Length: 354
Ligand code: KG4
Ligand code: ZN
Image (tube, rainbow, N blue to C red):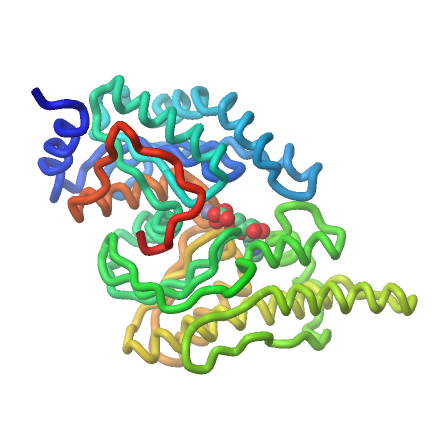
């Protein structure tokens, strides 16, 4: 007698090659409870319940509070995604969920819900890597995009340069040795008295500023593609504190602009070198920091000069959402991977390439 997992594997095998798969995806790795339904690469619904207003009181995401709010929001978010798409649960081909990386308690809410939902409907469940989801957001915006390409991944938890060699295959080329780019944006924002999440606020403030504050370009890895954000972040903190102690005026917009330029240049230089060294003609940007307008513009300009094309998702698909998780589930089905077992668990930290 075959069980749910065996039936799921058979169903997924039968789905390979179909371009009209109806997927419901759930994402709860940080502070957004999200559910989306896609048909192929088309987004039928995309619901996000953000907890930003709750966490900004604390200056960042409080894991326990995030988990509790996911529990309260998830049923409503999933019902709304089905209603918005005009789809009945029994019509779905499969369910997908982010199982890592992220806050363990937050991930567990999505994983537990998705497991119960898929099992009750007798549908396959696909376990998705959050970072691969960020990359896959680009296939929703550019359905004709095909690997190989260089991907610059920049989120609140990860910053890396990778070569994407297949729909579900990544070779990591370099990564941050300490803080992620988004984390550095958030910490610098805090020092400048800006609210969480700091990235968009730094970008806005930088629009009025000049790149006039001397900050070091910390680790310039001439051979590889690694970088470091902790030194740059500390340099900003020291600059602000020293100026305050001396009673000097800190022009916050100039600090924001100077920091943003250094932080972005570090990533774009590494991604460009990776593309040149590997002879790759496409660079794709992914993750929450991909929403940054200076990053989008400067990567595009630098690459254009070398005949390299740059892709990035629309703003709504840069930060955490479930449509990107559905898109990666689609990739995994096409690659014959990802059918989850009954004992699927949330994992706080998984390698980008897993
Ligand atoms: O990918 P994401 O939504 O969540 C994680 O997977 O971590 O990324 C969130 C990060 C936050 O650190 C936020 O400050 C940053 O992305 N971010 C930005 C911008 N919009 C969001 N950073 C710089 N400029 C932006 N416009
Ligand atoms: Zn993310």
